[in-house]
Structure formats: structure tokens, C-alpha cells
Image 1 (spheres, rainbow, N blue to C red):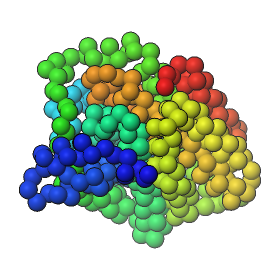
Image 2 (cartoon, helix red, strand yellow):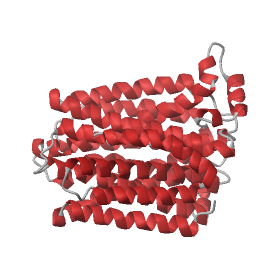
Image 3 (cartoon, helix red, strand yellow):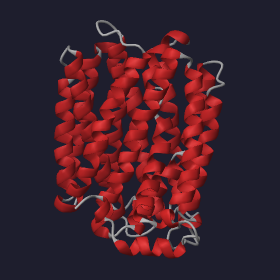
Length: 407
């Protein structure tokens, strides 16, 4: 049975009933999955897009590795700061409206980033990009948790995560190639156009939610405090923090490692390194079936082992082995993300958008820490020190899930 076949018929029939005439594709099983894939793709095509450009920005703006890494840190920090509030808004306004509006808004600062005259302006526009992203991520998690049958949440979430994986690769690849052959600014214009097209596609394909119940007090902070008293959610938030710490830390500072001697890779080659994400795009839907069969905890533990093995492999001083290690590391992280995201919906019995918003906040706070903290270790002892920090964080994730998650 394929991932698509695992999506239950009932939500699809409800979607068909609420769809407008002539929108059969939007109400179909393929339409729902495509919309979730597009939402993830449109978000992550912009989020980490400056990573392969960091060595270029280091020379262009004559700044340190830590300073130019703020073009990665800024949107991640914005996501962490605003995710809980956007989750509260979505618990009142609904799911689809917020998702489509956020993707549309994301395209605006993406276009404007192309006009940045200096590093400070670029960081500013990148921060504004991050303000719109929680309206997609947190609300999609809630949408899937509510609209999918319980036994298919994991496999449905895997489709969305696959979209984020492919989008993350595409964004880095596009700007890397464009920077190498034309100008990095053109890359941002292209990404803005893709995000706008994604908003229109999601508007067309994503069915209106049918199980959402608006919360009259959704602007109250009480749901957030209730979630913070939930041990299962706290454990999931901690794991989420560590997941993105590992991913951002690895795929930010490996660019400096590979741009320096003896590898001396340029922006186009660095962008192509992120093709390892495509392996994750293949593996993650399969992992979705594991989530539904063996549980979230056991799937996450296995994924952590895969990711840790990949990080160790990057310590070998040969490009093929490093690429293979990055592929394993990325795959492990993507499967962990699918497990943790699914566990949010399971652990939260109500106000799922705000629960997901808190998860996204802690998740991206981990990404912010991952873009900064390894930089100090990089400055002192290079890539090996960064790997050591990431392995410690991954070990903590495995311990938390093993001791505190309930399947």
C-alpha cells in the first residue's frame, strides 16, 4: 500500500462536498497531498537559501563567517519569536486562510531581499521573511492532525515534510547556480516568484478545513500555558529544538569547510551539495509508514543513529565520503522531524495550532542556536569541533525520546 493509498476516504469526501464546482482536483486525494507538498515546498525554498552563498557574502561584504551566518539566523529567529502568536491566531481564524495568506506574504520580503545594498539590509529582509513562515508551518501541522485519520497522520505528515525537503534543496540549488552564472540578487527574484505561485496553488488545491472549531478565547495566552504543563509536549519541544540545531549547524558551517582548502568549492558546487536533501525526499515518505507501524519513538531513535553516523562520516577528508555523510545526516534529521511533528498532534488534545506554534518556536529557536553556537567552535577548532557539538545534541534528543515519549 502506498502513502497515497493510506489517506482515508472520509476527509476526502468531506473536502469534495465543500469544494466549489469545477474544483474536482482540489477535492481529490491527490489534490490534498499536492497542496500539503506545495505548502512545505514554498516555505523552505526561501528559509535557508543563503547557506551556499555564505562564503560569497563573506568576501562580498568583507565580514566574518559568524556575521554572514546571520542571514541564516535572522529568519530562523523571527520564526521562533512569532510562531506561538500565529498559532493562537490560527486557532481563531481557521487553517487554510492563514496558510495561503502567509505564503503570499512571504513572497514580498523575498522579492525585496534582492534590493539589499549591504549586509544589514539583507539581514533585515531575511528577518521579515521569517515573520510569515510560522503561519505556514504551525498551521499545516494542525491541519494535518485534525483533518487526517489518526492512523494516517504520520504518513500524511511525511508528504508535507517531503515538500519541505525538496523546497530546501531547490532554494539552495537555484541561488547557488544563479550566483555562479549571473547575480545572487536574481536568485531572490526567482524565489519570490515561486513562493507567489505556491500561494495560488495552495489556494486552489487545499480543501477548506472541516473539523476545525474556532476558539473564542484564542487570543488568550491560557492555551500556551496549558501546553507548557503537558509533559509529552515539553519532551517533544525539546526534541524539536535539538533536531533543527543539528540540521542548521551542520549545513551552515559545512559550507565554510568545503569552501576553504583543500576543497575550494564555489557557490554553484555548494548549492549542488544540497542535492543530498533529495535522498531525504525519497526516504521520508517511507518513514511515514514506519511512524504509523512501529511508533514515533522507535522511528526517531533509529533516525538519530543514522544521522549521527552521517556526521561522523563527514570527518573523513574526502569529498565523496563527506557528501555521503551529509546525505545520511540530512535523512536522519528529516525522519526525526516527521516523528516529532506527528507527536505534537498526538500529545495535544486541543488548541493544536497553538501547540504546534510552540513546537515551531522551540524548533526554530534550536535552529537559531545551531546557526550561532557552532560558529564559536568553528573559530576555535574547525569542522571537527562543530561535529562534536552536533553529536552531543543528537544524543540528548535520543535520550529524551526514549525516556519521555509514549507511543
